[in-house]
Amino acid sequence: MLTRTAGLATAVATAGDLHASQTQPSGARGRVVPFHVDIPHARIVRIMARVRDVEWPDAPEDPDPWAYGTSLPVMKDLVQYWQTKYDWRARQARMNRMPQFKARIEDYDIHFVHVRGSGANPRPIIFSHGWPNTFLEFAKVVEPLAHPENHGGLVADAFSVVVPSLPGYAFSSKPRKPIGAPTTARLWNTLMTDVLGYREYIAQGGDLGFTISREIGYIAENCKAVHLNHLLGIGAPSLTPEEKLAETTRANWTRVEGAYMAIQSTKPLTISYAMSNSPVGVAAWVLEKIRAWSGLQNGDLWSVFTRDEVLDNIMLFMVTNTYGTGAWYYAASRTDPSPPRGKLEKPTGFAEYPAHKSSVGMWPRSYAERNYNVVWWSTPPAGGHFPADEVPELFIEDIRGFNRHLRSLGV
Image 1 (tube, helix red, strand yellow):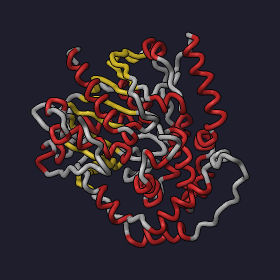
Image 2 (cartoon, rainbow, N blue to C red):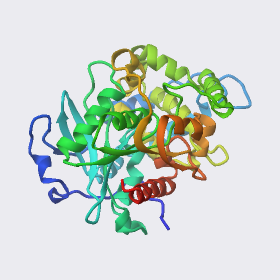
Image 3 (cartoon, rainbow, N blue to C red):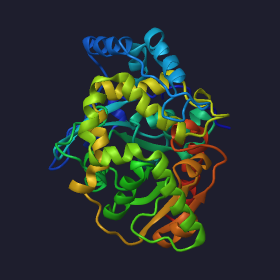
């Protein structure tokens, strides 16, 4: 039985944890250097001064405090906590318990978490986060996946875990213009093979990580399988009644919930002027989506996340001024479009989390089987759009189950 890992993983890296090849640059391979989060005190002071100087908007009268956007009472509660109890230095120290590194790949300094797994043959896996998230989306699962024997599991289930920050997010360098799945997939494959020296690996993701991991499956011979917790109708028509219902549901969702996506895919710079200067604005923008997309208990936002966890993610956007460049991913269709693709032949697994399906939407298995080589389809009993953060135990078991199944197939 797994127990939930509170807060961040506690793994500590040593030089011996890394492949010897990591420290030697060669061709496209970048030198791997250890990285610790260390934000200047003056930066934190400036951000917190803006939090304290918040000017509250007027909220329309409505029985539902979320009817017109992020609830004003919930925001006031969160900002009160931010001002009086949130401790960036303590949270930064927790982040630094995860072994983090940077490597130069092409024109980017890529920040990533890397933990070599236990045992003789841990399977390498790379996780791609999405928006409005950061590498912290996977913080609760890194240590249990890498060292299952310390969490009630078996050494045979160990993974070597890699969690990069997308370019333009957190501590990875910022692109000069919007980039999307094609560029990111190429960078991730170089990270896994040329930089870290892995001969084969699994790619996993949801949200933006869905398109990135899918693209890795197409382009990278070293990627042996793909695991996804998202499925949209991309590049192929919906045929069955269930598929067409998913399409209609998604269209309705886009109409009601997709304003952020329309703005970020068309005019991301305009909104970035506000977000770069308003930590409370970023918090409201992000919190609305976390609430709408997560599998909450009785609608209680704090039944799944702690205030510290939500603020950690928001603070990473603020301390690195990356709200804007993170939003650029939605505009990448202009500058870095994904080419038309046929069926993905790599062994592919899907996890259909219930709150994700009912909120953001997910196409059914029939669609997946026409467009992917589906070897795994699971329906966990709980969880939403951020399963590694919401239901880490279920997420871990699904990743392990997928890997065991791959081995039974000889993959």
